[in-house]
Image (cartoon, rainbow, N blue to C red; front, side, top):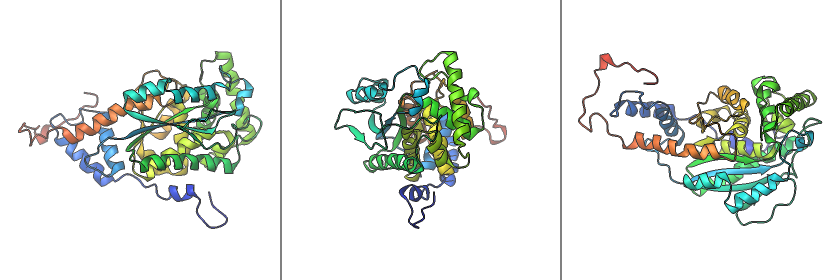
Length: 368
């Protein structure tokens, strides 16, 4: 990521601000959890979430107030290879649907009391101007990565920095829990390629049915990805190179959101497969980002489980969802808030005058 002029880019500067969570506070949070009126470890993953939010926010009494889900849209040149069940114009049409409040993410975000921030980072074709639409278009979609790089290295950097800028604006307004979502016909193809490169897995094992394509089309999609990897040879050790060779502008933007969240100590709930691929890019740019990410759910897309395993993240929900848009992430917002309330509001054995367990008989049984 070096800059020959010697001046740090916005991306490099922010990466330098990303630090691991405060593990001393995590230990204090664990000590409090162990004193609450319950058997130790009995709240399972909710306890892990509470510890994580404390470590990220550096607050022992984390409060979840303003919530934002970022929905970034962009198109993908690889759709020319017949990898999607839907035509490319659906991307711009869905952006209008988001703006009109009629998409699944709008309904679920209202349910979660979260604001939807919509950005066009590279939609191919005109999108009607709207006061609630952020337009920072890198290009009119990426190029067909099965025939060459999806974008230039400069465009890859710009896409990440666009996400950083948009996230910084919302964090500056007080957002204290953020989630990632996206829209882009063809983006499961890019996500599959990213996961294949980072995890070293054959595209056939990573590639799913995306928008509902038939098995014969899925096999063709995997072959398109395989050909793109052979032509472009993305460097597994260089996240920006992977993004440039086979990624998407919205994927880069979401990686920027994750970097900003980690840098400014705001927990980030990642959504499904596309967000998982963006998380691989973000963690490739700044490995400490991983400990600030919360996996909202596990997508039905087969590559998502591989991405989560590589990231060492445990999903909060498994609902067989594969819509994207941030839908799984906003559903998980309730669980993150619940975890914080348990840590903050539950009584301890001492405060409630409840007899605790004998120190020499405590046994924690996972899952009980």
